[in-house]
Image 1 (cartoon, protein in one colour):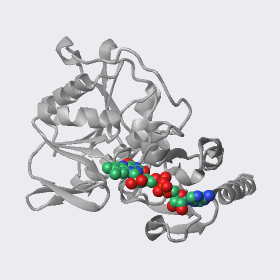
Image 2 (cartoon, helix red, strand yellow):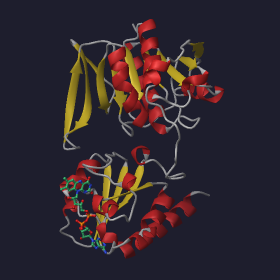
Image 3 (tube, helix red, strand yellow):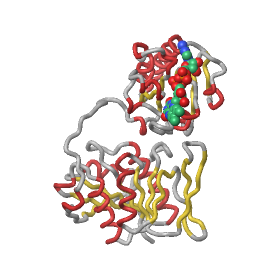
Image 4 (cartoon, protein in one colour):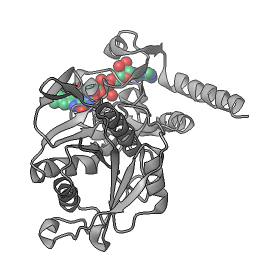
Length: 330
Ligand SMILES: Cc1cc2nc3c(=O)[nH]c(=O)nc-3n(C[C@H](O)[C@H](O)[C@H](O)COP(=O)(O)OP(=O)(O)OC[C@H]3O[C@@H](n4cnc5c(N)ncnc54)[C@H](O)[C@@H]3O)c2cc1C
């Protein structure tokens, strides 16, 4: 039985949460097959600490693909490296985190490894009589879709926040796989990176998101959103009109035409709950709505609602969380 292989994406020298989630899901998938789990790490230099971390999150074997020209990340080069490994080892099951880079690598990998692709699944694939099926969110969060394939290798990307990372320590072998990137795969390459948000939590990875809409009245009031986000260790987001008028940067805009997220907790402040907004956030596991209009449509999909003025409610909520944390961290 083929091993399950997880691409353990290294991001700024670390494994971010989506990679730990993919390793956890990979472990479960491998257990369901009675197969080993392999973590494949690609980079110019792979830190020993990450090799150990992959073992702590369930890998029976870590495969290192190291080459000086594997940094910076180029999607086609990484896809080529993974495809080479999948073909050489006759691997049948591959899982990648559905991060920006995972989304860029997986389709090329599927083509080059002659595989089938399940993109953005939210649970470990299930064996059926004649193949595999998996669940994913569809139609802008308005439905759940089951995808099926009987083709191997099966390549899948796991949507962030689909499960909680779990440690599952085991003794882990380490192996090197030799791969030399080809110039032909570097047709488009990054030539510089300009960071726009240095210490903020990426929206797609955040467990908690505090989001503001036009009800905030103006950018001068955004500190209430930021202060609540800070005490909750949350990312901040906004509705489309807020980004359109320049109160907030466009990379914070969530919804049908913005980023689609599925955090454990989404706190919507002064947002009406238009269908196009819900399309990006309805997959959140818990939704809290703060709005001064009790008829606001967002309340219909809320798990908890507070009717009140955002500028009064949010600072009080921030203070309450702060006090709670102080009392419970000693
Ligand atoms: C093709 C298309 C695509 C779109 N894509 C998106 C998208 O991706 N994302 C998106 O967000 N929108 C999108 N929209 C826009 C969407 O239809 C709504 O217009 C938008 O979401 C409304 O933003 P809002 O809720 O911030 O503002 P509003 O609709 O103006 O709502 C403001 C809310 O704040 C409340 N409020 C006012 N004052 C206070 C206060 N003091 N305290 C508390 N609450 C208060 C009001 O009761 C109201 O519910 C799209 C529209 C179209 C046509």
